[in-house]
Amino acid sequence: MTELMTNNEKEEFDISVSSLLETLQQSQSEFSANDEELVFLSSLLQSKELNALVHVHNSIVTEQSHPVLSNAMQISLEVLDVLLSRLALNEDCKELFVLLQRPNLQGLLCAHDAVAQKDYYPRLPEIPQELLDDDEETVKIVQLVKSNEPLGATIKTDEETGKIVVARVMHGGAADRSGLIHVGDEVCEVNGINVEGKTPGDVLKILQSSEGTITFKLIPAEGKMGYRESKVRVRAHFEYDATSDPYIPCKDAGLSFKRGEILHVVSQDDAYWWQARKEGDKNLRAGIIPSKALQERKILHERSLAENGDSSDPLFSQCGPGGLGGPSCIPLVKIADTVYSSPTKTPCSAVKTKKILYDLAETDDFDREEIPTYEEVAKLYPLPDTKRPVILIGPSGVGRSELKRRLIALDPDKFTQVTPYTTRPKKPGEEEGKEYHFVSHEAMTGLISAGKMIEFGEYKGHLYGTSSDSVLELIKTGRVAVLNPAYQSLKVLRSATFKPLVLFIAPPSFAQLKESRMAAYARSPFDQYNSRAFTDDEFHDIIRVARRIEFLYHHWFDEVIVNEDLGMAFEQLLRAVERTENEPTWVPASWVQ
Ligand SMILES: Nc1ncnc2c1ncn2[C@@H]1O[C@H](COP(=O)(O)OP(=O)(O)OP(=O)(O)O)[C@@H](O)[C@H]1O
Image (cartoon, rainbow, N blue to C red; front, side):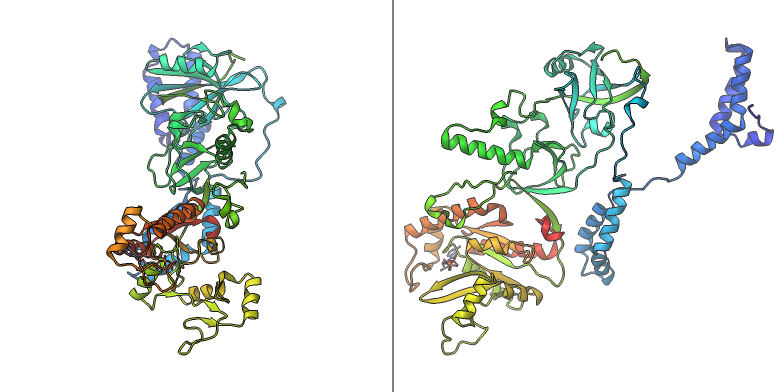
């Protein structure tokens, strides 16, 4: 039996319950309801139980029972960014900067975010089908208002059931932000029109001809709850134009990007099409980009077409007008309002390639190249006592030695070259460890076979080489090692051990190259006596080799410096080095983990 309240207790009534009761009592005469119903309603509103329940509800709503944020890790990275520019200001900034980078603190923040995002494992099993009521299905009615913002969803015909279903929901788009439309939701009706048996194209026509509000009747997908936004960042090693991609299922949803841009891949759920945003982009809606696997297959397919006139990859020959993966976009609609009715009877039932694209005569150095598509990257924060080595890559004669010399001359205490090893005898005036480390032939071959030499070669019967331990020792001293090795050494040097800054020194056009070198009376390094100027053939060679290095290794360059005007090239070099000392830089993710 319902217990009624005393007057004292009534004073503690929730304000909304009291005003309901008051309205009921004031307007009793206007109701057509009989006395019995009015007495019941009035006693219910005055009952202790209802009042207690309202209090519990209010407490739950007002209590902060959920995490304040779920991106503590991201915020800590932003704080690191801010602190970086203030390190010199005071010791507290420095201490916090070091503390925030400690693995245990980062682990704690990461765990906090996982809990806040309810990213729990293992996932609970689905409720068994027999426990669900067979006769009744929940439908949801979603109302949308046409606007200029795309909905951010695509539809397709389900291969098994033949029904129209939501194929993809773009992260951060209008559909995603509403939380109302999910992948796998079945579309039953659009504006009261039953879409059973219709194609996605038919549905799009209905949508395009609709004005104002559009009403969808959907059957929610089973077990679609919650997705996790991936934190993966990649550097794109190719340029992508979604508007001219014949394979993309929905051009409007595509994200175009340039080579070298950093992308935040928010979903890799689809094998062919990832969802991504450009790093730092304020627009929250993700766009689709080809997955790594798809891009690799696409390149192989295109090479095969170019070389043999055909391709054996069935994936691309199947591709119809809807693109690869085929769902159609739902265009130009925005969610305005939603009404759920539940439950009601439903009215409707990495490929690696061995192929290479350069002269056969020159393949010896490069016979195991990967197709560069995306590289997972992470931010590397500068550490005060550890300096990244600077590696100048480029064709012989382009000016790397000159740039290196200028860098060392600018600040010899900071920048230094790595003393090479040689088997040639010491000349008068030379000191061990200054010009060279003088070693025996046996010692040198021992170092080479132990894989200790970054690069080595023979000149006039003597071996010369640079040891990896020499570079590591320099890094430990807090100085910046500057190297201009042969480009093949990048395979060894570009690793988590050295974490180098790789700069490609490129030649300008033939005319600019010739003019700038002539104006400076530059001596040709290809001439044994260094007494004559460059020849046209040498300039052509510099350009040809530069193109080849760039084609093969562009994905490993942090920056390209075109060496036309020496002063400007040097300035650019200096700024690039300073950035690694003062700002976080994107490096392969494996270097940071
Ligand atoms: N931008 C420039 N303008 C004019 N002359 C230049 C420029 N850059 C370099 N030089 C000159 O070109 C010549 C060759 O440069 P450098 O020796 O640095 O080439 P390199 O790339 O180190 O070649 P190698 O790898 O064979 O030693 C030098 O005389 C140098 O002073």
